[in-house]
Image 1: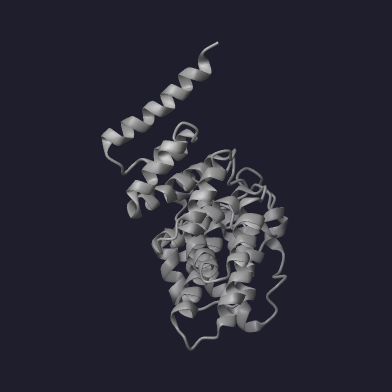
Image 2: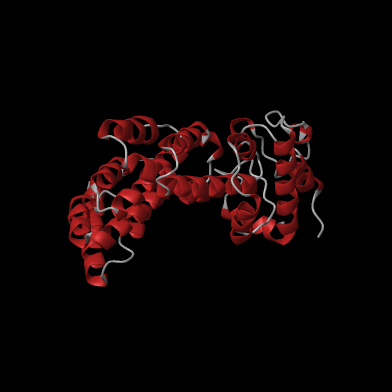
Length: 298
């Protein structure tokens, strides 16, 4: 396997936090990739970091890189991402092989410009949270610390797959079992009100867990809020979660559509109605056409 010099170096050493990352798609100068670890000072952590790098290199595939760069829009919202071409099942296997990673290692991974490193960190963190949630013998403080760490490191959760891999499993589960005030503070005041599109996507995707528990109010409230959102990736996620709401309550989804179909962004609407009967889909499309016709009348 032959790797580009940039790919090999990006694995060798940790990088700057994602907020300071620069696009590496065309720029061949990577000073931050040559710096020694800034967080990892323990020899065990350094050894584990090297193990992760080697395992990722073994699964890297240069032939997949261009496709991934297009898929994750490195020239737009994915600017700065470096891809190795490793497949998601392989990343999950690596996470299992390396075991539970401590916060220092996870922080190092989440601050990497290598997309697969950030995904690996989130897969690992989700598994740790699920273990803490399912095992009554584990201290509840462990779950609280994982949630707080996730929220602290949101800057590295900056593409749709990273959000969708983790938001429901950590944020959704955690806030569902917290007080109403605590949940509202995070969902509405912090995430939904954020200027950062990934925070808003975390908010709506987190409510997938609420929907599975047949608690729908937050999903519906956010969906109405995000009708006015400017980002297609927020619209798409909202339509997806509404579709899952419809799987639980088709009458509730019809009620939502009767009220909002005419005003929903196209992507949100299309995602939302994907599973409903064709006849009902046509009825709600008519509402959108009527609104469009009214707007064009001089």
